[in-house]
Amino acid sequence: MRPMLATPTPTPGLPPQGSGWVHEVKWDGVRALGETHGGTLRLFNRNEREVTSAYPEIVDGARGLPDGLLLDGEIIAIDPLSGTPSLHGISPRIHVRSAERAARLALERPATFMAFDVLRHDGHLVTGLPLAERRGLLEGLDLERPAWGRSETYDDADALVRFTRDSGLEGVMSKRIASRYQPGTRSVDWVKTPNRTELVAVIGGWLPEAGDDRRLGSVWVGHATDEETFDTVPVLYPLGRVGSGLSHRERDLLLTVLRGIERSRPPFVPVPTGPEAQRTHWVEPMICAQVRYLSLSNGGLMRQPVLRSIRPDVRAVDAATARLLS
Image (cartoon, rainbow, N blue to C red):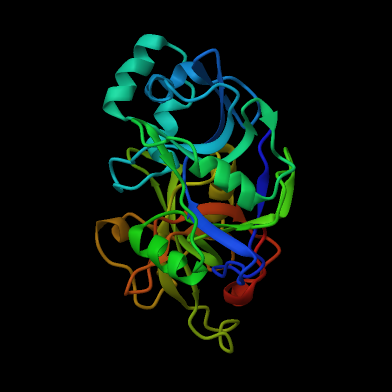
């Protein structure tokens, strides 16, 4: 069975409101279904491929769960850099098939199955029940066990958004209480509100990869300081530097374009300083890119930015108000 999927919130940063919804932490991990049969657990990813062997600690922790369960959840692990659950934290575990390596990683970077729904209970399919009843079945299970957890629900969406932002968590998942489970469907009954936000910015310079001037390492981005004068005095205020997100081919294509519009002076005010700025090749502020980021610093710089796509459809002067692509 393929899991039910969520749609993005229509208004960035604002989850649905009202008594017809409950809200959970949006865990940044790997979606999985867990099935109990014959006293053991089998795990399947969202494409119905079995991944049981990659997570021996989750299998061990499931001993004693009743047969006939099919649980929906997220496999999470703590990122050693951020100290929070993240896809980066669980990524070394995803494709492991060697039992020996899986056992070693279970000690080095332990995973947890965070259950949030029941699809089969006592051998009976319960996807036709409303979420409120399925949650009741989930809460009746003993999930206080090693490598297991239960994703709790909350009524106050705004408070949960604030908590997840302050805690560095990925975001909030909101679910309609009366909704049925729709396998393999992306439904408006489940709405995700990621704490990461996005913007369209203008590229003002590029840095080569360390030790290789032929490859693009990162770009400086910003927004127009004055939209009225930008056509004659194209000046940007800096939003920071971003390097990850594009494929090697996309980086090579972008670098070819940027090399053709280089200039001697930075188009930023204030001018970026430091060793990275000294290595930068400044460019005419003409090329726009959509960037996702976790939050803004007090100085207005993006934290943990990722390049989503190049936006040739957006003029540099209009970047700050451009429509975001999903």
